[in-house]
Image (cartoon, rainbow, N blue to C red):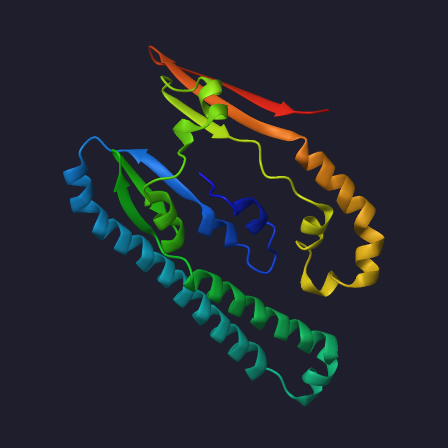
Length: 222
């Protein structure tokens, strides 16, 4: 499930994992005592794996730079030129950004109303576990979809409206300037209008014998 603010967070090109801070998942728990016993070790293993990826990437970066720079003499450096050196710098910066993103990822979890709630940030988990406020089950749109009672279902509500300026903000920083914004504004406004015509989607699955039957419905204003 995507929490409020997740749609616009997903447009942030400077932080590709930003939307994860607004994402939570729910799984029905039939034996909460067993789940509470096993989840600490499972969460530790997941988070250790994430840190292992960081360590491996750092090692790859170090070994690559040592190999490249160690094999170069002055003539090779001159032949590589400014563009080539800039490319190496960009590669190093990409590794650094990915490391920063992974450093901010952490699996966290909690239990609420018979469900295991998992998230990738403490903020998202706190929002999901917070008592009070409207719940999905209380939503008129969800109730009208008639999804309960199925073996499984998916529900995407009508998303918050986006503006052309929101989409412009999703461009890389180097492409954001006043002249380019003025040039692209009509296209961004048109794209935002097309996106805003999406009014949600539902999917549901039922089981008959050993056959799983699924159907989906997409609401879009043409």
